[in-house]
Image 1 (cartoon, rainbow, N blue to C red):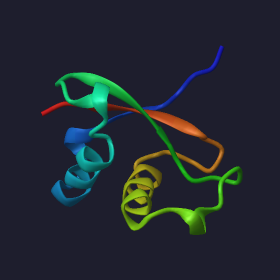
Image 2 (image 1 turned 45 degrees about the vertical axis):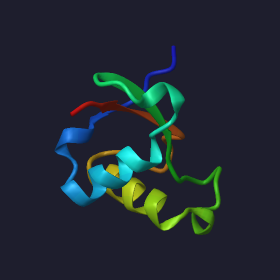
Image 3 (image 1 turned 180 degrees about the horizontal axis):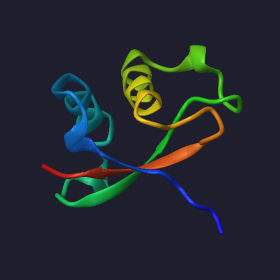
Image 4 (image 1 turned 60 degrees about the vertical axis):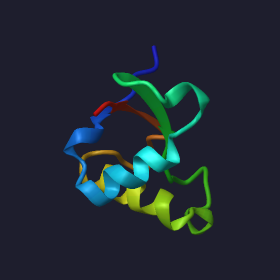
Amino acid sequence: MNLMKVFDCQKMPKEVRDVFYEETEGEGNRCNDIYVSWDIAGDWRDCDGDTPNEKLIDDWLFAKGANREDKEVIVKRWW
């Protein structure tokens, strides 16, 4: 069984949430009340290659309990 941590976008500071909405505005992500997978930085990915937006989101996720062993988390995307 593969467990993933779940985070709530409404708990993000507004500037992080706005960037998260922008980064996840894909074809299937325009509706309300969905769960979005998010690849976070870790040993498997070069953290220096992240965009500033990705780094902002990753930093918030790390501050809220994600860790370097997590390759992917789930974020509830709603407004």
